[in-house]
Amino acid sequence: MKDERLTKLAERLIHHSLRLQAKERVLIRGPVAAKALMKELIDEAYRMGAYPYAELEDDEITSHLLRGNVKEQLDTLSEWNYKKYEDVDALIIVSGDGSEGRGAIVPPERYHLQEAAMKTSTMFFVNNRRWVLLNFPTIGSAKKAGMSFEQYEDFLLNVCTLDYRKMERAMKVLKEWMERTDQVRILSPGTDLTFSIKNMPAVICAGNHNLPDGEVFTAPLKDSVNGTISFNTSSAYQGNVFQDITLSFQEGRIMKATSNQSDKMNRLLDGDEGSRYIGEFAMGVNPYILEPMGDILFDEKISGSLHLAAGQSYQEADNGNQSSSHWDMVLIQRPEYGGGDIYFDDILIRKDGLFVPSELCHLNPDHLK
Image 1 (cartoon, one colour):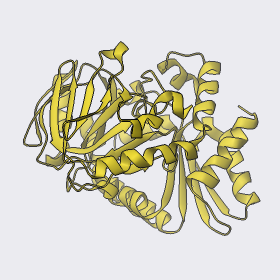
Image 2 (tube, one colour):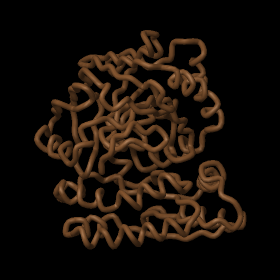
Image 3 (cartoon, rainbow, N blue to C red):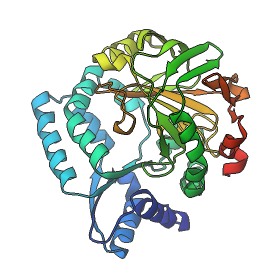
Image 4 (tube, rainbow, N blue to C red):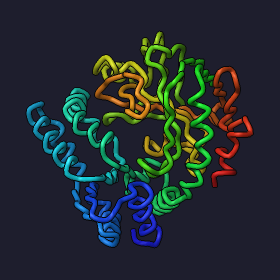
């Protein structure tokens, strides 16, 4: 893939997402399939006087290692990564396979082992370094999205190079509204869920950590979640694809979880105590992402959607929940997906995927395009 949009994407990542400066060190990590983008990133870093470093990854080799890893082995890898992250100023992480099925042969306990061992080094760069995560088009990811490779390539480049500064300006009002809200209520088919976000910070996501982007997130007070929520998109997690997920909560804890693979889902949720509590609540607003693609980097930004994450909260909106997992699940509330309402302190904020208060209408798709 080589066109002007690829160069533009590299410029967007280096200058908007990372705000990289001359003489800063940037680690560029990605799969062999993303070599074209990685070369553009290296060139752009050199052009502005920064110092790029690169790591090529092979998803098949990574999966092969994962099937036999042990704690002592992973502890060493985590120590290596920690040192590496200490020595750089920023990271660009490119994901490019999109094939969840390959990981299905890896037992869930192997994923838990790896997540637990890598948590220290991962949280170090998440909380202490500038970073951005993006997908790169491959035949596998195009197939999963139900598109030809050419369609998917065009879609991805277009959605990753939209005007994120305009989106960021529009998000500021939603951030302020969320930060003065106590009670949230979500209503949809099979869903009646309440929780508090009182005094929790809300965080704008407009191309700084993810491309594509387009969400504002916070976290519920850990013990405040009550009721039931039914998600209407598939959720890929730890090499498995879950459908028809319904979660029931009591005082913050997931008391009942069902899906097309209920037993496996509950084993994953029993990975540690924090896995059954919510670490994130977010609203998606990207006007160009309308349908589920089986990739959470896209699906959590769907226009008219919301998502909850079971597990670890982010430091920027920390509700105290600790876990080795962070499992995002998406509910789309546009009319063609059954509709739904979101209330902040009994005020209707969004109906059927569109924001209702005039102050928030600039986040509706017609204004963001």
